[in-house]
Amino acid sequence: MTVFDDLVGQEQAAAVLQRAAAAAAEALAGGRGAGMTHAWLFTGPPGSGRSEAAQAFAAALLCPDLGCGHCDMCHQVSVGSHPDVETVRPQGLSYSVKQTRELVLRASGAPTLGRWRVILFEDADRATEAAANALLKAIEEPPPRTVWLLCSPAPDDMVITIRSRCRVVTLRTPSTEAIAHVLSTRDDVPFETAEFAARATRGHIGRARRLALDEETRRRRDAVLALPRTLTGLGQCVEAAERLVKTSSEDAEEATAHLNEAETTELRKIYGEGSTGKGLNKGLVRGGAGAIKDLEDRQKSRATRIKRDSLDVALLDLVAFYRDVLAVQFGAAVELSAEDRSADLEALASSSSPEDTLRRIDAIMLCRERLAANVNPQIAVEALTLSLWRPRL
Image 1 (tube, one colour):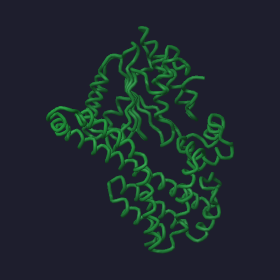
Image 2 (spheres, rainbow, N blue to C red; image 1 turned 45 degrees about the vertical axis):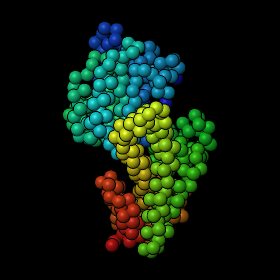
Image 3 (spheres, rainbow, N blue to C red; image 1 turned 90 degrees about the vertical axis):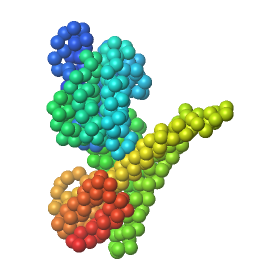
Image 4 (cartoon, rainbow, N blue to C red; image 1 turned 60 degrees about the vertical axis):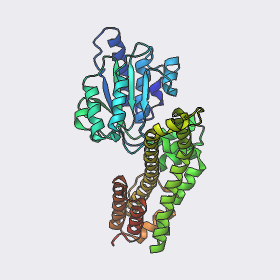
């Protein structure tokens, strides 16, 4: 077992990374190290394991045995405690230039343990234009022992100046069989359930695991896929949109409420709230008002991101459902992600035309674009449900 064995269905990418890790070890020993570079871009569809591949590569760079998977170095990387690995996970809608400059400054330090200093930047495509320019300067002139591992869905999501300076590792969507095997062997999920989850999530490993293990996740998916047959009138369309938006808001509230409170309490303590002494408490809290306002803005951005991601999962489930409807209409011999709802697929396929189905899919994709452009979620989703009800309007 090595750290690369956890990459599901990514044998080709794993082989590239293993060779690069060996080249990195050669470079440390004074050799040429051909095949190793200081900047990498991991791309692939959602759920393909971009961050996992980058983390495995980080472990291989820092492990004396090139990612054995069981030594202290590999364990520290896997749990996020290695002093020479910094993982950046943008929680808001974007990653600012201020945050990027602070990151670049930290990345310029020498490695603590003498091998490499690794910066693993998840969702690097969320960097603003100014942040991308700041990142470009660091990638153009990196310290000799710093390695940048950037992750984004596609190479084109990164500005061309950064992309051209990185070695691209492209991951593919894992097969249903590969994901089902992992769920059944590593998570002890019954094979039928594992196969259902893998098929329903269309190769997204993380979602497949949640769907297989969490009953609430399955309930929510069922509610989303039941939506098309409930759209029988204008009132039902508005109600359905309200339910979708409300569910996404509840997800954001559940994910952020406790964290927001802890962060705010900690920051207030730092700025002296609760301290004793004449004038001390009042003065320090006032001095920290700007920091508290910045924290609240970041928390609001994080909640908006979670809400948008929750809605996007529902929309992608609907896209997959109508894709299955189209497959039934054409009699295509393809794997159906919503095979468990065959009755609904058959009913909708027989009561509409392929042109209607394509219009519905286009309406869902347009809704995703509108949400990404900060259109009011309620308005965007109401427009969607109306289009799903009457695709020719």
